[in-house]
Length: 111
Image (cartoon, rainbow, N blue to C red; front, side, top):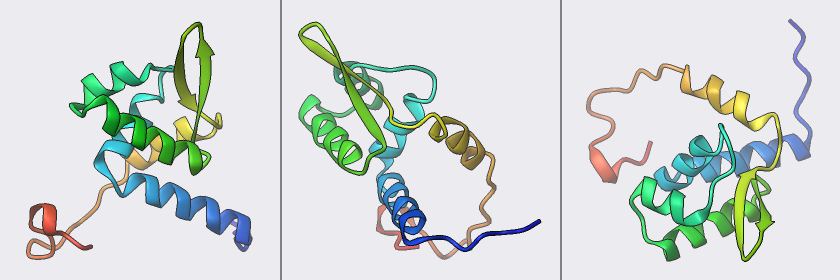
C-alpha cells in the first residue's frame, strides 16, 4: 500500500476535524448529521444542550468547513459539508482504543 505524504492542506483539514471531535457536543453533531440534515433546535434537544450553545457549536463547525447551512423558509438546516465525512465518521466509530486504566479519569482527562 502506497501512502502519500500529507500536504499542508491535508494536515490543516485533519487538525480542524480533530478540533471538532475534541468536544463531545460537536462530535455528537457530526455523528447526528451523518444520516440527514437537521435543524439546530432538534440537534440541541437530541444532544441535551441549549439552543445558544448549539448555535456556538454550529458556528465552530461551519468555520472549520465541516458543516454548511441550507435555508429552509425562515429556518436553516445543517448538513455535513463534504460527502466523504459521513463514511469517514462511520470508519472512526469502528476504531477500538485501548486506554490505559489510570490515564483518564472523567472530565479532567488530557490524553
